[in-house]
Image (cartoon, rainbow, N blue to C red):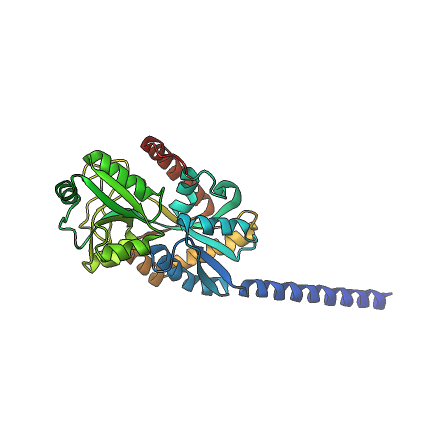
Length: 328
């Protein structure tokens, strides 16, 4: 009888070991799979550059390749729709700022996705500000100087580039126009990269985008950032005043950057990716690169990012409503 029991136990242990090894192998394969980090804008823009900095470090933290996949179009709408349709396995992620997640659903009749239902926040990693910049061919060196120049040159009419229609930059242009009694048209582009090309070529005199989009050319003297959002000046360009300093209040709540996954992604998977993001941005080289781009780096848990998004949505819902903008 003891012999039979010993044989049974040995077989049970061998079976358990085999199952454990199999599961371990499956987990290793899963970790070694390629993870796609989608960006809703063209290569060459600020969001794309941020994604590439983060993806390099995430590869080591996640134990497998992490590739940036650009899906430009409609202000990130195409990328968001792709995320909605993706398998909830943690291998398709969306690195996005406020526009695609918060603003698009408020300015588009049928965006094709509902962030609250179709996505789950993984983690936030930074905040940033939008800024107003002038092309080098524009003689003005301040926001007031630009306003005066538009009045003199165009009778109060002018065009200001924006990365996407129905975006925070568009509403910022509207407020600037209203406060200064100008007839400014927000000229939408397919992302900040083509807008920047036209600004550097002096095809358009001014533009509104994020500091990461402007900072390199601002420091090189190829364009001039003349005002930033937020409650304080930015460490990356301390010489530039805030809109509030210039008498334009209402733009103190600043946008965020975060990573999102399809709804239904297991919590254990989300926690593993969030931990990888937290470790990645804690690395001095990653933090320094992101800070140099004008970001304020800081980790937000899934819950903190969700709270941040809801608060931001409340602020901009009022601004959009007061502007008279009709969803399109």
